[in-house]
Length: 430
Image (cartoon, rainbow, N blue to C red; front, side, top):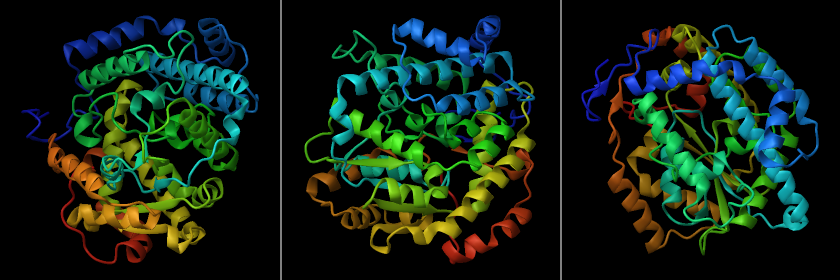
């Protein structure tokens, strides 16, 4: 693997046989050694979460069926490693603790459900279509309430930690980011996660209701994919809305930033649910060459799969994500008309990159927000420090994840004709 600094063009030639730094190898060995104490068992996870927090009310228990399906799907994952089991155990434990803390907060603050939630601005585009870059750029205007990475992972403070400075949740997340960057040093080139304050997507909040496509990104879980696709997601989007109300109550946004800025690729196949849950929302749908999107997404998931699977299967990951993105785009073409014309815009990646400040101004105008001098200054400052490829680039090669570009072009022809009628320039990161 070429890793000659962030300026290098990196070819991820170890997807099928991962290589780790000494520190990352030591961490994985430690995780392997404690795997037997980390069962993917619902009763054990519930008991541990309750014991650690001293709380016992997880709220409405409808989520338990979903959790059982998820845990069974991961237990049956054909390549799940012992370190991967530990990773998953830690994530599910945290999600159950988040439920306990959320339920306790709602009990103590029953007025949260009545808090006004202004119509948000929502970025809904495929992974790898510039959604992360656009999210950070819009956030830099200072016009929105956003979700930092630390708050997405731990939305509610632990007992005794409310008001503690420095913020303990941020400190824990920062340590986790450092570990992630050591174990996967090229991940930042594909999806920049500079630190714990990085503006994050709200899919992490949906995860604590155990119904989101997030779980598909960790490793191969076909049973969960089938279950998730067969269920209405409206109740879980209402759960997300309640989360946003609670977070707004605990930590209001800065002055002049009254509405939320949201983003998740999941929204692309849930447009009617999104419109119903957030009436009046402004929705930005990003678009990009689907051959690049599939190759890039499959490469990123294949790279992170080393933290969950042994052996890895990059070709299988490529096939899986080609099919997954095809389903998402089928849903988009079916449901695009569910969004009010005056509250939704399609934004090709090429158009965004050709005039980024112009795109921001158009989005803010549609949302009824001012692109004043302060907002422009914030956006310009962000762009000055985040030129395309500023952390280096990955050389995305379809053959490394078992993909045939000609086959992909045929599969996505109808989407390209509708949303990308003109040729776009060479791809750039994120």
